[in-house]
Length: 223
Image (cartoon, rainbow, N blue to C red; front, side, top):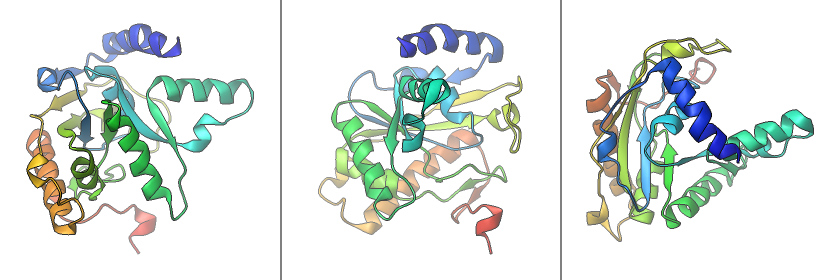
């Protein structure tokens, strides 16, 4: 019920207010497993993608979002489930494997899974080197990868701002990338890197951001 409310009431209302400009939605595969790989500009990126994507998109969410107590906790849990979030434990050695398994489950069921290859929001506006999880996932599942570029979301919710502003947002979907030519080579770090770099290049072409061939680090991680 909450999913229907968000999809058919809140999403159209948000589109009416923000009027996102969407390009290439017709390229999105209508069926089958799809990995949606996007640049990451702001905290609202996931909500924007969920609103404009032609299909329901699942994202990873902290497990504690789903287990809150009281009215607020249950409401937050209901919202993240309705938005397609998948619970995953973080902060332990098995977190990476847990995340990949959660993503594989979505894709094995023919769903769409959203991922930010940079791993975190870009604080300098540039596109940073992608982590190879997206490559590993594509190789393990055979899912097509749809590159996505968001722009303007960094003005809707600038870093440090709690509430979103009204500002123009543009979302560009690229041509689906098929990596089944590497079938059986998923255990190769070099192949995972090659696939990831191809995905990042596709995002770069859509976003026209400056590219930096280093992983993004927040200020407290840079020392």
